Length: 190
Ligand SMILES: Cc1cc2nc3c(=O)[nH]c(=O)nc-3n(C[C@H](O)[C@H](O)[C@H](O)COP(=O)(O)O)c2cc1C
Image (tube, rainbow, N blue to C red; front, side, top):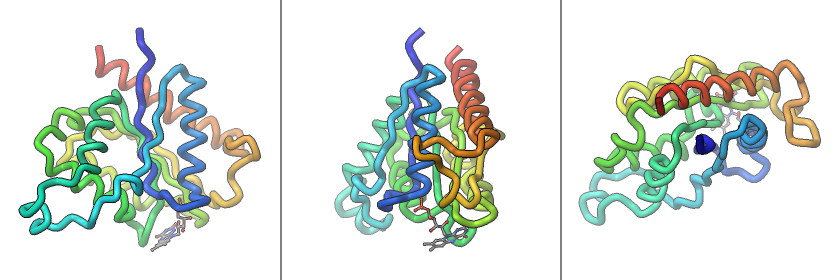
């Protein structure tokens, strides 16, 4: 069987982003589990804030079509996102709002196994935003969001020099979330 392909979607493109670090740790762990992972760059899509007048005048921007093609080309999705005021950040929400304007998003997203991770320098690890993200991705977009998730608290101190989570138990939780994602994806693929 061909290796499963996982699209990793970091919700922050900031230089030094803790979520990008977590995304890279997940990418390495997925590779160890035999999957192929692609880390996407939402900032590179250069999407304007969603605007119905802009859409009416010039259609859905190319960046949203690029992201849709990435969703379509992967069997599973891993979102790794910061928490802004207990909510997912605009970079992520806006990109997905644009994608949802393309009718083909249903085939690319509906029923697609999806796992959620977050990292924060705070004590709650961004967990509150994962609740909102779970609702956002599952209720309308129909993504199959796994119950397993991980919020890395005090993430500014959480990574070892090799990029792994320095706490072994936390690294094991990460591997557990990713294993569950691959197992669910295999089951969905039949
Ligand atoms: C507008 C804004 C709101 C934030 N709100 C929260 C919050 O509600 N909870 C939290 O844990 N951290 C919050 N933070 C801090 C972020 O967790 C922190 O900046 C983190 O490093 C962002 O992720 P990144 O490193 O991947 O860019 C907020 C940061 C910003 C810029």
